[in-house]
Image (cartoon, rainbow, N blue to C red; front, side, top):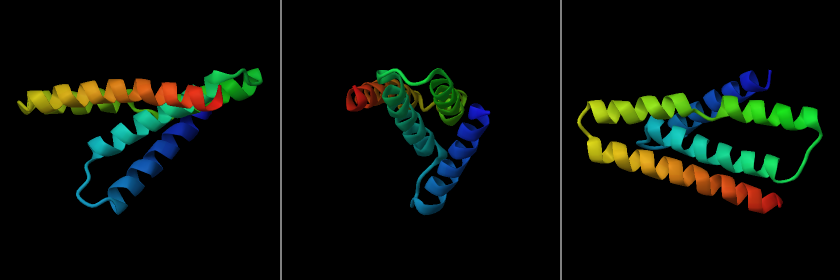
Length: 109
């Protein structure tokens, strides 16, 4: 159930991002969703929560973040021979997500 809620929230954030952002692409929405999702997961896991609540948040954030879309976009850049852009996208997404998680963890710790 949490995954479905997270996926719906992801869709809503993506649609808003594309609708209100000028000259933005889906790739930027996915980037923001993944980093913010990692930051939220860090907040959730920094201190123990009741088991049911923690599980709900983890499943919701699993549905919210978009690793499969991230991989598809990186592959699409690679396939279009935009290899440098693909590698930069991969690097900043992974590093940004790690720092997002660490930020969220430290906010709540």
